[in-house]
Amino acid sequence: MKAKDDDLRPEYPAELIKRGVRGKYAKRYREGTNIVRIDPDLHELFPDSDAVNRALREYASGKDRAAT
Image (cartoon, rainbow, N blue to C red; front, side, top):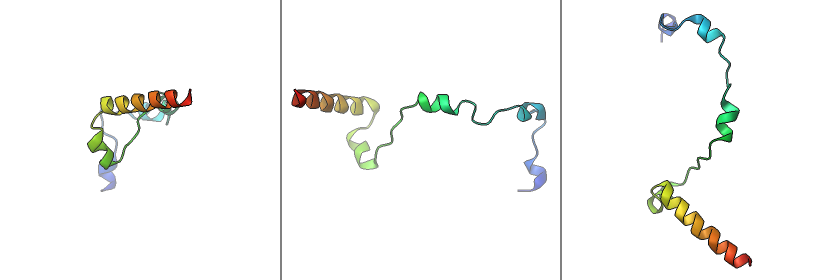
């Protein structure tokens, strides 16, 4: 990539870029996100979040019964 190609486009004013704060919402994003990646072989068994939630609820209810 040439240095000239790396320039800011005219429609983006430099002042806007200069006053930005890096990571401003990073903490808020991490606190509100609960995404979990599952392995491909498990994805075949649990193709969507509903399937995962059903399995986890069933597992959790079995643990509750075993603990009492």
